[in-house]
Every structure is written in structure tokens, then in C-alpha cells.
Image (cartoon, rainbow, N blue to C red; front, side, top):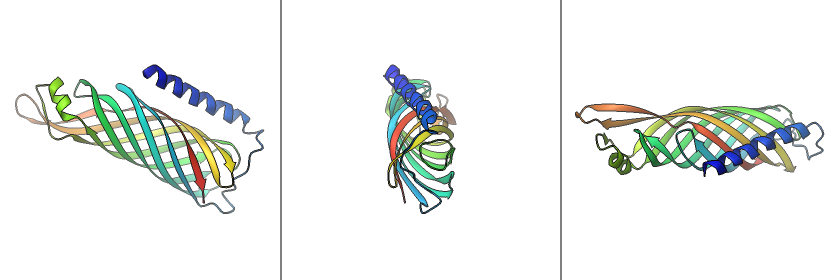
Length: 209
């Protein structure tokens, strides 16, 4: 599964390079942000590859406002389902619900355009506490949820396919962390900091309004 995810991410990144190289010569339908568009709604999905764990799936819903022909800012919701390492126990099933503030900068104001982005997020991570305690009998996890926070950077390309409609492909890298309460073998309450960082490759569709 990891090899499949790496091939998928490689394909996405190669697509970014190819589309970026074609952007100066593309004769695609133009989406003129400065004329009428003020809001961009996006949905996408792909694979999430954690640095500590097994490849899973990722999906986003995004709403952004256009503040200039090349700049956007807004929020997105991301869902991840994957196996990761928690409390030094491997392959713990985890679902992440992420709320992220995000900004994008388009290198071209119309047509096919590469872009970069940056996001800051908070997250609620739900995991299998019983599985953790089976593999780490010396600890008692306080519930099956952890509070997360992080930062994300992305490189993408957007290509218009019709009036007000575009497709996109992105490669993302995120630094994500989780805070979880637990009790150790001596009965002391502790807070554990877990690293949930990883890579994401996704494709999706955008609607300009």
C-alpha cells in the first residue's frame, strides 16, 4: 500500500510539473476572477501517507474568497482515515477531522495556473484506545480522542474545463501533532505529544461563483 501511495504521489507531482510547463501555451477557457468571481468552492480526495504509519485516504471540502486575481483565502474541512503509531504502538486506526484556515497564491491570473498554498489547522483525532492499551499495557489512555494542531504547505495546478469550473491536482506536506491525556504505570497523569505528519496527494474539482 505504501508503494502504491508513493507511485500516486509521484504521478501527481509529475502532473504538476507537466501542467505548469504547458501553462504558457494553453488555450483553455479562461476564468477571469477579477470580472465576476468572488467565491471558489472545491472538493477533492486522494491518499494520505503518514511518516509513521500506513497509507490511508483523505478528502477535503473547501470554501475560499477571491481577494485579488491571484490570491485566495478561506477555510477547509479535511477528513483522514489511516493507521498510525500512537504511544509507540503500531497500526492504530485513526480518523482525523481537521478544520484549516488556508491561503493560495496563483502564479497566473487566468487559464492553467500552478499555485502554492499555506494552511494552519486544529483537529479532532479519534483512535482505537483499546488497541493502544492492548499493545501498551503499562498505560491507560483517557478516552479515544486527541486534540491536534498543525501547519500545511502545498503545491498545485488548476486547469479550467468550462465556464466557472476547474479541476486541480495537489501535493501537500503537513506537520501535524496530537495532544492526548493518559495515566502511566505509576498512576501519574501525563500528556503525550504524537507526530501525525505526512504527505497527501489529491485531485478534485472547483466551482467559481
